[in-house]
Image (cartoon, rainbow, N blue to C red; front, side):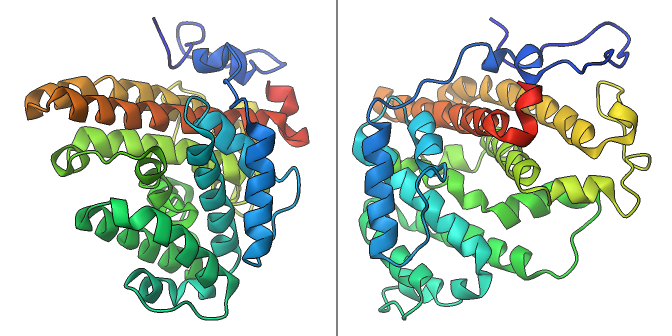
Length: 314
C-alpha cells in the first residue's frame, strides 16, 4: 500500500486553483491520526508539571495533542512524558541562554534557579538512567547544536536551511522517543545512514510544520527579502515558485516531498535489522521506534491543518 506521496498529473504540471489539499496529496492523512484515549489526563498532568516547575503551559497549547497522537498506542505515562519534553523544548527555544547550565545538570550538578534548568533536571532524572552512555552523549550533542543554532544571528538561505532548522528546532526530540517508550535502539542501527535518513526526514517535516504555524524559519528563508520564491531551487515535482511565488506553497511542496522521503527511508529499516542480526526483542524495539518516527510528523501535520491559518489546506 502506498503510504507516502500522492503524485499529481504526469509532467509535473501545477494544479489548478484552488490548490490540492494536503489530505489529498498525502495518503498518510487520508485517515485521522489516532489520539490517546487519556489525552485529557495527559493535558492536565502536563500543565500541572509545567506550573510546578515554573514553565508556561496554557490549556489547549497543543503539546498534549501532539503527544497524544504520537504516542496514541502507548501508556499514559509515556505520552505524558513526551508532552512534558515538548513543553520544555518550547521553553528552551524561547530562552536559549537558559540552556547554558543544562549540560552541567546532565552531568549531575544541582540545577540553578532558571525554570528551564529545574524542569530539565526533573525530566533527566527520570529518562537518563535507563539509557546508555552513547544515547546520553548523542542527546547532549543535539542540545549543544540547538543552542548554537538559536544563538546564531543570521539564518541561512533556503537551500542551506534544513540542517540548521533541525538543529534550531531540536533534533534530539527524536532521541527522546526511546526513553519515553522505554526502549533503546542498538548503537549499530542508530549509526546507520538509513536510520539517519529516517530521523532527518521526520525532523524536517516537524520543523517546517512548526515554522509554518509560527510564520518564520523556513518560511522566512523561502520568502527572502522580496517575498518571492523565484530564486529557490525547483521542487522535485517541478513546481518552482508554485502559487505565484507564494513561499507557503513552496514549503508545503517540500513537506510533501519529505514525507515521501520518510516513508522510503523507513522501508529500508527492516533490512538494516536483518543485516545486523538482531534478536527478536531488539528488532521489535527498532521497528517500534521507527513507527514513532513516522507518527510524530503525522501528528504535527494534523496540528498544522488545525491551525486557523492553514485549515484551507486540509
